[in-house]
Amino acid sequence: MTARVLHGDCRVLMAAMEEASVDSICTDPPYGLSSEPDCAEVLTHWLAGDDYEHTGNGFMGNSWDSFVPGPATWKEAYRVLKPGGFLLAFFGTRTYDLGVIAIRLAGFEVRDMVHWLYGSGFPKGGNRDGKGTCLKPAHEPIVLARKPFKGSVAKNEAKHRTGALNIDACRIHADDAQGGAYTVKRLKPGATLEKTGGNWRPDDGVAYHGEMKPGRWPANVVHDGSEEVLEGFPHTTSGLMKAGTRRAAQDHPGSVCFGTFGGDEAASDTYADSGSAARFFYCAKASKVDRDEGLDQFAPQQFVQFQTGNGESGAASSLSEGRDTQYRNIHPTVKPEALMRWLVRLITPPGGLVLDPFTGSGSTGKAAVLEGLGFLGCEMTEEYLPIARSRITAAEARAEIERAAPMQPGLFGEAA
Image (cartoon, rainbow, N blue to C red):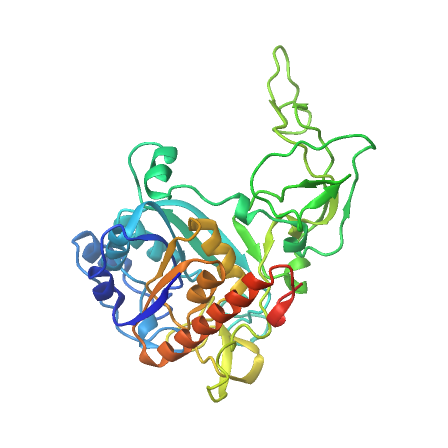
């Protein structure tokens, strides 16, 4: 598969692309963390088909972050996406509403929101007599939208290979959950486990007397596995229920079923385990070498690392432990490799083409090539181009090694 990063305004670059030529879009666009806009004025422009030009600088004083992309940008993204193709776009908690309205006005249907929970954020500003102006940033919302299509999902998949999420490829396995230590109850000797089908990974599944249980259905929450985040999840226990077991309606304690059966049947054996509820969600831990991988030829620079939850014009949103750190990758909002791999795998058909209109330092492109997908990126800021291209090139070389030795976990600083 090929990977390319183009230099220029994504609206111009996408306008030159062929219609319905990409399978998915996964991107981290500007959050627009600048001064508060006049929302009535914004919507007046957008509904009239005009771009809204917002003055001022956004995150860390960057002019490119002055405002969220408007409907004109997402209309070009809509045009190049195949019918049924999915869009995943990050936004800040302050500007998610405006970002999603722009996507809706472009014609997309919003399907869900994914919450990325992390423990590395710090609130902007200090504690003044027990008061402050913002909360600690601990999550970023990701909109999941889809380009509408005619007919059934099955027919659209047969024609375009798009329209449905890759559930089995993104199930939550024991090694993916990172929810702390938890136990798994075994079935009684001689009992069998009904397999629900799908391509779950047998090396990651939970063994029940020689059979492998597929991972849990992916949820719309992803976490980073940090102690701070895990402490927020309660300890839970899941009882074992065999496939075909009839469950009565349990809308509230003490509910009863009279007459004919009013509940439903378990489609497959349920999990029987206990531990942190974090095990229900995918854990996207960041590798220590992720940010600078492939950038050995770049000189380290003094750089302050930030999260992007609640910044204001010309200022950072939150300081990572208040320390200046040397990085070769100077982009301020690098996303973890594991998170991006899970996201592109969720929405892209095998061997498909991923588009990122706001490539930045190439995190989406890196994830795409590691997943065996094609990638096409657009980036307007020239200084980020060599960083993105070098990271993607290094990922391509790593993908070749991983394909040659697929049974070797823990390479390149990743969690085994």
